[in-house]
Amino acid sequence: MTSFTYKALDNYGKSRSGVIDAETPERAKELLTARGLVPQQVEKRQSEPFSMRRLMLKLTPVRSDELVLFTKQLGTMLRVGVPILRTLEIMEKQAENPRLKATAAAMAADIRDGASLSGAVKKHRKIFSPLYYSMVEAGETGGVVPEVLDRLIYVMQHENKVKADIQSAMLYPVIVLVFLAVAFLGLTILIIPQFARIFDQADITLPLATRICLKLNLLLTKYWMQTTATVAALIFLLGAFLRTDKGRYMRDNMMIHLPVIGKILVKAAISRFASIFSILQSSGVAVLEAIHVLAGAIGNSAMAHQLRKAIPMLQEGKGLSKPLQSVEAFTPMLINMVAIGEESGRLDQMLRDVSEHYDAEVEYAMKRLSTMVGPVLILLLAILVGFFALAVFLPIWDMYKVIR
Image 1: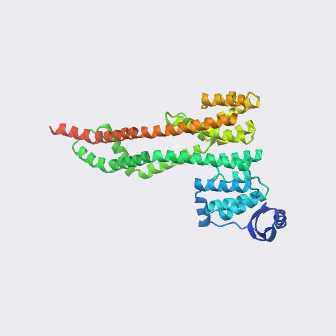
Image 2: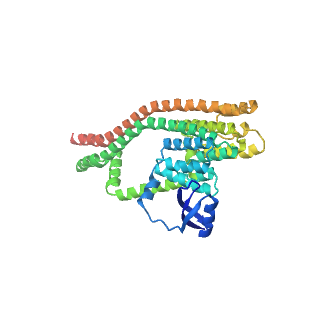
Image 3: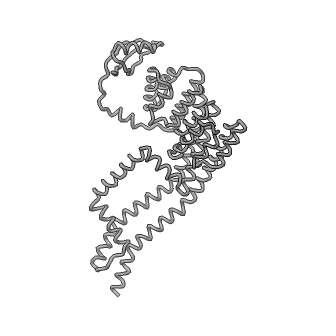
C-alpha cells in the first residue's frame, strides 16, 4: 500500500487536497471517484522532512473549552441532518485551533475511506479521551449519536469544573511547598557548609542533623551530575512503568487506598460511573455493552479491572446489582440504588440520583481537604525549621560547652 497526494474537485466545484492510500495511482483515482471527487492530480507522496510547523502543531494543546465547543458543533450539525463528512469539512474551516483543524481534516479523510465516526475519533487519543470515543461508539450502536454528544458535553463540563476546583484548592499548597523546597536547598547548599567549617576548626563531633545536611550538600554540589542523572533515570523508568497496564493498575489501586484523597477519588469515580451508565441506559444501550464501555471510561484502572471481572456474572444472567458487588470500591448505596432501579424499571433515574449525590459529596470533601491543608503545611514548615535549627544550633551549643 502506497500513499498518494491528490488534488480534486468536490460536488460543489471546490478544490480538495489530501492523502490517500492505494496500490497504484489508477486505484487511487478510482477511490477518489467513489468518494464523489473528480481527480485532477495524483502523485506518490514524498517523505515529509522535519519542519517546525509540524512540531508546533503536535505541541499545540487543545483546551477543554475548545473540545466542548467542537463537540457542541458536531452534535448540532448531526442533529439537523448534515452528513458527517460535510460536518467535518465545515468544522475544519471553522476551527480556530490549528490542531483541531488538522484533526477534523484527518477524521474526514478516515470517514471517506469507510471508517466510522468512533473509529476516526479513536485514532486521536491525544485529544479524545477513552470516555469520548467509548460514548461515541455507544451512540453509534444505539443510533443516538447527537443525544450522546449532548450528555458527553455535560460530563466534560462537570469534570472540568471538578478539576478547576481541585486546582484552585491545590494552588496555595503547591506555592508553599515550592518555597519550602527553595529554602531547603538554599540552607543546604549555602548556609550549613559555612557553619561546618567553623565546627571543624573547633574539633566538634557534629550531630546527625548536621551530618545529613553536609551529605546532601555533597550530593548537590560535588556530585550534582551523577545525582541529576540518577533522578532523571528513575523518573524516566517510573514513567515508563506507569504507562504499562500493570503500572497503571498499581498506581490507581494505591491511590484509591490513600487515607483522605482515596475516598475523594472513589466518590468521583462512582459519580462518573453512575452518570455515564445513566446516559447509556437512557440512550437504549444494552447493559452488557454499557459495562464494556464503562470499564474503559471509569477513569481508574483498578476499578475497571474489577468491573471487567463482573462481566461473566452478567452473561450468566445474575442481574446487575449482584455482579457489581464484586467491585470492592462500589459503596452499598450504589449497589442498593441499582437494585431498586432494576426492580422498578427506572435504573437511569436511580443512577442519575446517585451521580448527583456523589457530586455533592466530592464537592464537600474537597472543601474539607482544603481546610486540612493549612495545618499540614504548618506542620511541614515546623519540621523543616526544627531540622535546620538542630543542624545549626546543636553544634553551637557544643562549642559553647567546650569554650566554657
